[in-house]
Length: 350
Image: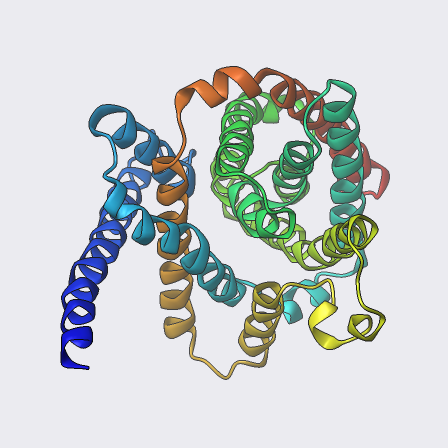
């Protein structure tokens, strides 16, 4: 028995060390991305996308050792789910209810419209089904975070996740610059402009950057509307989960006794955790300072996951897959901007 146990103990140590090395690499990239995102000229891109791009750059310049893959995979999958759960601390459901039905109506219409338009256009342009859904969710809801949250439902490939996140980040940045140039000509009050920005831009960083020139009132409302769109992640994830589950049932034989059990529900456990954390934050059990620290940790964990994705993606995938979903997201973003402006003026918010 002793002769059997010695080799096992010797092999476990290097395996754990290699996992730790992969985790450490993603952590260092995430921290670098955090620092870079605080620079004024990079803040609009956001920590998550910067982390993914740094991971891709690191792979291109230095390569990635095979032994590190277990730790990198742990970051891109397990830490991603934990980060999504903790991100629920950013949402206060009570604040959203107090803003009245108009903001919820705008957010719901915009999310549903963009999902349908971007997905339809991407499929019409012969983009893969998974990439079409990811790009649509990122454009409609909350950028890279939405892509990362929806991807496990679809068993998406890492290059598909990275590509859709990069597309949304690029277009969101371009639209943010466009908004800051056009806002004096839109004829909107600071509050209504904030609602317009929050209802149509992609990432939270984009929303804040675009609304800032019109003052704090615009920023406050912009973030509130944006977080209302973030809350749409829960029902969208459930719908996509149900759709994906039914497709799997059509392709495989599922025992009758398995149907209807709790573990076959379409809502993924980490999205349930996201909603639970939002409820806890709404009740006020956790002090605001601790909630803010948990949100900071959430973004760090998700950035580590995005770094892990980047470390496994090659630039060739972008050249091969990128043009068609980019066009679909661009058209969808333009139509979303027009719709958002129309809703703000039609509901008397201008």
